[in-house]
Image (cartoon, rainbow, N blue to C red; front, side, top):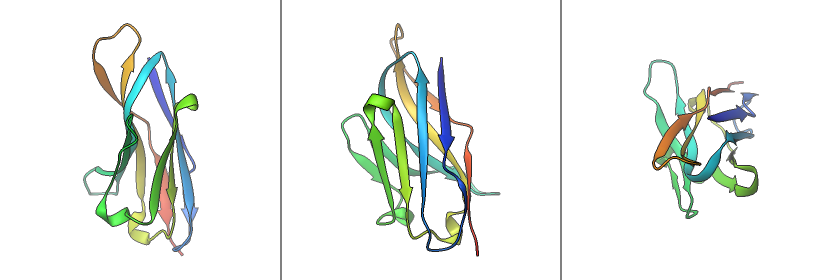
Length: 121
């Protein structure tokens, strides 16, 4: 019932910037939280940034001051502005959302398919 479609990944040089987008579609009643995780080869999937329905945000320590998460409620879209990118930011970035659907009584967790971000010179 829900699809999360990411875009904006690609190859960027160290110090550069990218902006990721994740658009949620479906019979969405509310998005309680939405954000981004990332996973590098051989490593676990970790939270990067999250924004809640109350507009509170959480960032991984490694990206604080460099990444900014924002949300467009009218479009059911979340953005991740990534500045001052480092090679260690290289990973597949996954959109994640906790969503209440119409006619459902519980929140459900959804994942996008991921978008590759590569930071290299």
